[in-house]
Length: 144
Image 1 (cartoon, rainbow, N blue to C red):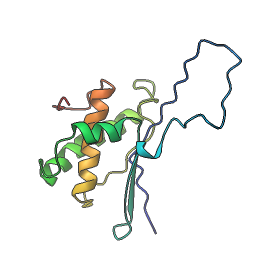
Image 2 (cartoon, one colour):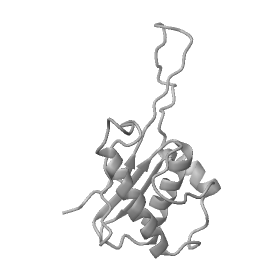
Image 3 (tube, rainbow, N blue to C red):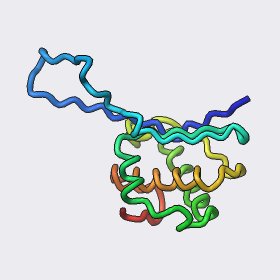
Image 4 (tube, rainbow, N blue to C red):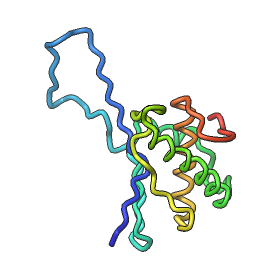
């Protein structure tokens, strides 16, 4: 049985208009989330799938992330373990933390070897998220 691990699913829909009620969408309107806004990793052998949807993350990743293999996998795993744990705590406290930011828990099992690429993307998403949305999950967060 395939286990789906949907890491982050955040879609922000903002519509700004000076008109009040006469606005409508046509077929030429572009969707809010494009395929370039989605980062997907799947591994059928380990039976996991990671999907990150957040407008701007792909661009940020290409422009700001440190190169692959800059950090060791064990470093990335330790940061992910702490940040994902705090993320999940915040999902469970919607009265204290915005449910618009913390929509769903992340099923990250520290006993599973997800490999370098998955840990690299989760780590960088957490850096992006904390800097973009002015959140501090725990400890030092690189400014990029």
